[in-house]
Image (cartoon, rainbow, N blue to C red; front, side, top):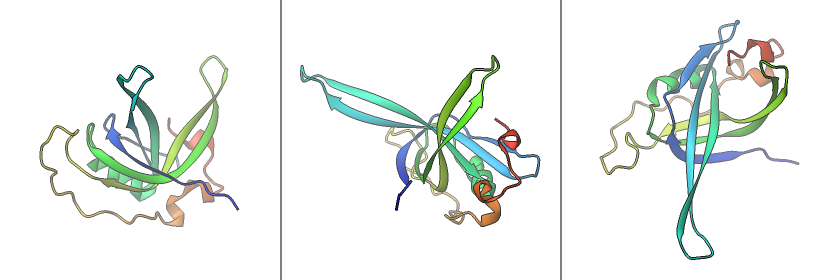
Length: 146
């Protein structure tokens, strides 16, 4: 048995992009920053920021692409997926992304002390099988618009 599950809480690094495959399936993509504070050997405070690429397919990607904006604190649950591709010079590249199964906006600010605003109701946390391109043979890497 194996498990591929990730939970992240971080700040949206940019407004999401929403694109559509040739078959009409929505794909929302945004970056999420998580921060880790630490003390080094000298006792000085340090911080490391990790950037995550988040993708959401179908209704989840379409609806959250309209609600998330740069700086909002977000909860993202999903799985890690690797993707191989060739750059414009033909060099093989590999990237990792979080394929979201649930997204929730936790605040309307970037931690500057302002009160969170009420968000619209959360769409279903689990996308339908029609929204999941990894269970459909009809979508290939060429269909992904990024």
